[in-house]
Amino acid sequence: MPQASRQRMHIGFDDTDSTRKGCTTYVAALLVEELEKLKASFLDYPSLIRLNPNVPWKTRGNGALCLRIEYDGALEEKIKECTVNLVEAQSDLEWKGTDPGIVFLKTPEIPQEVTAFAKKAITGIVTLKEAMQLIRKFHAEAIGYNTRRGIIGALAAIGETLTKDHTFELIAYRAPDNFGKKRQVNEESIFKMDEALQPYTFNNVDKEKHRVIITPRGLDPILFGIRGETPEIVKKAYAMVKPLERIERWVIFRSNQGTDAHLAKVTALSQIQPYSSVIAKGTVSKNPRVIPLRHVIFTVKDETAEVDCAAYEPTGSLRKIARELTIGDKVEVYGAARKPSQGKPLTINLEKINVLQLAQQNQQRNPVCLECGKRLKSMGRNQGFRCEKCGKRFNNLPKIEVPTKRALKLELYVTSTRSQRHLTKPLTRYGMEKHGKAAAKLNENWHSKASP
Image (cartoon, rainbow, N blue to C red; front, top):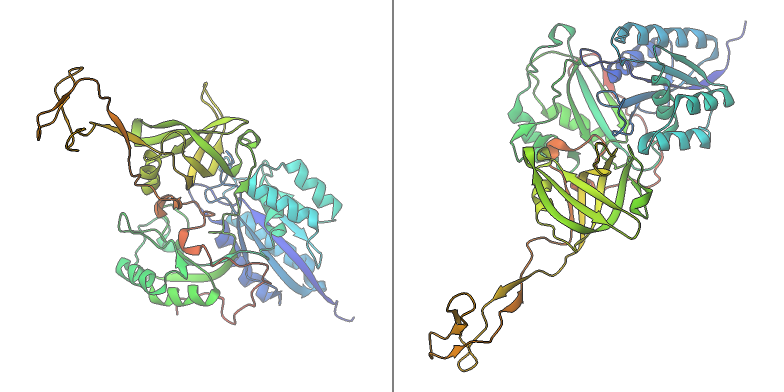
């Protein structure tokens, strides 16, 4: 019988890991190798799509994966079976909160409604019902486990095609016998790599604390992940890092990380919804105050509403900037909206502050002598002033208001590197965004089972 024609399929999956083990990107790395054995060819790098970081039921990194392949139609069932078996084998199904989902969508072009669904999943709240309606409408297949919530992320990963701004991440995985042990990487090599390749790689180290941040702390199989602007630059960075333990495999992913994809502009503070991530303008209406654990809270308002803004202690330099604000300053705030609770108002957990306009601050100073112009000396409360130079006394002169110079500048301030979310765009990426560019052409060597 003649061989079936080549087909195209998008395979999305999410929520396979738990706090005690696993990683959905690792499932993707394993699946890439299995699909290649089935003669599938890849249309793009695996997509690592970070979803709304503000949802209360998010997974550890809140990342969903998508593989876009072309394959022999006769092997379709084997490809699906391979995917399902691998997800089941790698998922921590006994852990409460691990709710894997898989979606298979066969279509040359992603439907606009699925793209819109992905955008909503990254910036706001979507439901399993919405996902299933689209899956049925476009004749996709979905498989879910436990609460099946992972189907939402699986479909969103398919829908986010990254045709606009995107970055890349090379993730290196540990040998299984090292899972759970302290990660062993030469830290000096990471600092040297960061210095040599900035700004084309980002968020490698926390310079404030002189700490490496490309190595996770959990029990997952990742040894380190390097983020950058191109596949070539993350491979170059990888070659500069010196691991002190065996690397089992590595893969390059295309991602929405570092793009601010989760932030949506609102034109009025009253439009902010709990669990959304927003960019909003307002005027400082209550001066910053420091609460326990050294967090800084200030309040902004517009014609429609008033909301609190919180710069938590881990935000580092951003907390210092928040303390410098004063009533009347006009700002643009970036961050996640936390649901009101126990009488507290809706609060934006800050990621960035854009200082747009500074209110004038004055300080009171003694007047100058009307005879010689020297600054007068106070003779005591309500007792007037005396000139030490010419001896003149003045009983009825008031103190004068003198403008003070503000330390703040009209610019964008971002939370410290160590506290930036996966999606937060660092300052080094401004001006480097990709606008409407097509999917990157796959390099010949974009994944490997062994360290070079």
